Image (cartoon, rainbow, N blue to C red; front, side):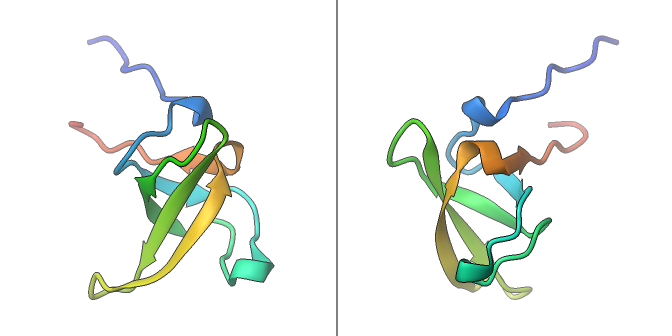
Length: 76
């Protein structure tokens, strides 16, 4: 079985699940928090939506693609 190539930060796309690689104190976000990419306003930034355990969005934050790790799931 061949390994699936990993996406790079430049390949972050809509609805990708991502995790923050850096602290974002101004936005109240911590390193490692996961969110979903909901918009890509330009080549270097994306908008990431963060939700609570009930699925309610509580923050949408503009993040540099380079500050994100794309989550990969088995079987995807």
